Length: 238
Image (cartoon, rainbow, N blue to C red):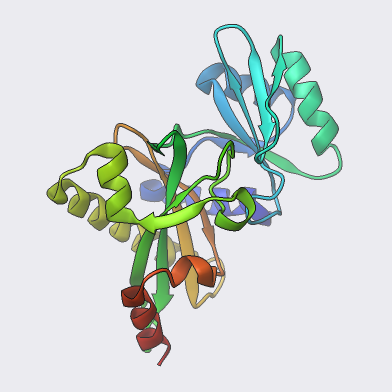
């Protein structure tokens, strides 16, 4: 199966990577009810779309259920049935997935995720090239910089500002994410050839992280936000 679900199932066959994958399945009434009751917050995503297009988030509060698409207005519902009926009206034409929402760490009330950039060097081996934090735009449930109106900052700044990690804790977190990214890239070799991969991780306030997605084309505006990373990419391409 192609798309997000196919890639999720492919990664799930590696036990080490599977431990970092949020629960994900085809969207239907039963799966939506099940994941909402278990996790209280989920993402609804088009299986084949990219760049945050069409993503919705549903979550429960003490009194109601809420739903928002990308960075639109938040809608409120009395029960799961009416929430799903609203989702169904917007998703009936294509295949969608429902996925447990990681409660992302925040910077000034805005959630962020972590983009790890990997490229092949001149020996065709995977090499880490950089890492950034992507911060969601105002009232947005997606961290895509262009579509969500957010911005990117150095990962160290994000870990310090949001989680108050020491330099040693930051180093350990970055080291762990790089090691996991290498594992993901080597697994991906069996799926499709690519010269570069961007891997998005979510991290929560307890410093637990999970794999959100991997993409084949790294957006240049994300990659080239600092001169050190730009020089590294030029060196790998030489």
